Length: 99
Image (tube, rainbow, N blue to C red; front, side, top):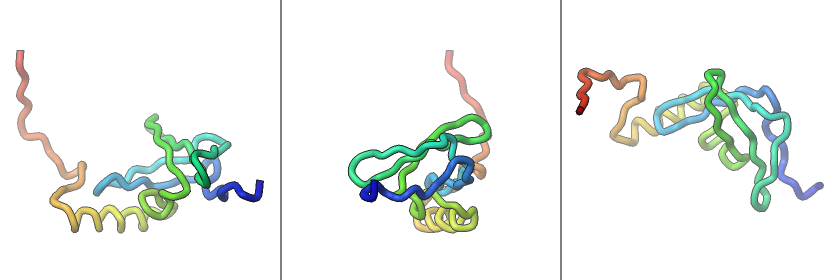
């Protein structure tokens, strides 16, 4: 229908999802997107390691990017404005276990 939101992602497209200061690569998994709510379209995402997620048109350019460089820029912006570090920079020094 002409009133449906546009299809912005297609099966196989690579996207980069920004989660706070980290960037994770996904690809569009399903061949079909779906309509959700009024005026919104959703997409199923999958990581090569097997993780799943989904995104919507409104998140493209905000937390989901088609270009890796744009995702890194957004992640770095978060790090600069927050008191945090990337998960890849966290190094466990000691493990404590309880019986």
